[in-house]
Length: 147
Image (cartoon, rainbow, N blue to C red):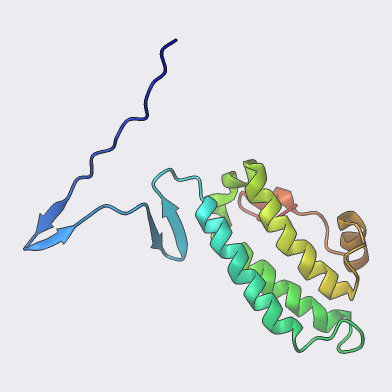
């Protein structure tokens, strides 16, 4: 039995006007993280972390019981959704990878639970009905969303 070894990549270094330029695995351009494989996994990971941070900062001022009503809580979801869906027409095809879709749906679910003042035992479908925010996986390609 013959197995192939992974090919070693040779790195190409450039020098322009005495400045050395070396290749990197990923780069941030206009807020989108582009990796060498263009699978956008790193972008989705960083974006979901950023949305989580914003959501946790906002939920500190929105207690789960009491506090502002549903309209005020929808602002929280609007912030989270805008962070997640930034430049989605560029990376929406990455949602075909199950891990990427799960990561974004997890953030969306937690935000919806805060909007509805619900507990984590509520199913995702039920929380979407309660909040009036539909499953929105189909809006990624131009009209973007998550489920």
